[in-house]
Amino acid sequence: MEAAKKRKMNWSANEINALVDGFVEYQEVLEGKLSNQLTSKVKLELYENLTERSVEEVRKKLSDIKTDVRQLERKRLREARATGGGPAIADLKDWQEKLLSALPKVSIECFPGIDNFKVQTTLNAEDKELSKGIQPTNSRSLGKHLIHFTTPI
Image (tube, rainbow, N blue to C red; front, side, top):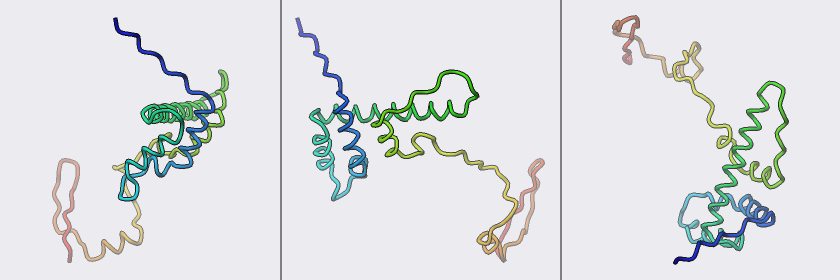
């Protein structure tokens, strides 16, 4: 009969602190785009030097704690906008705050919405310059909408 797979040890607080400190210090390298100077070998060596764990374990743990910190911050922001009542959300640990400060805000708050159908009522100086010399030459009706086709003068 095959031996049961032995469970790996939990990450200690010191290991997590070292991992976060290393990530914050070398974030540009660890998350940077590969190039002639920044090779996968350089990244692997850096991951190996962060803790005594294997590269796969370090990458997995780093991914997991970044996800957890993002979720905690989103929950905190959502609760801050909610009306009163209920228990307060627990503060983040020091290593969580440090990691949160290194993460891009857009990964937590997402991109703001863009209204593609917003009607522009005024032209800025660049638009006015571009529109000089263009006049409508033909109009067609498409249901309720009148479409103007323009050509340069």
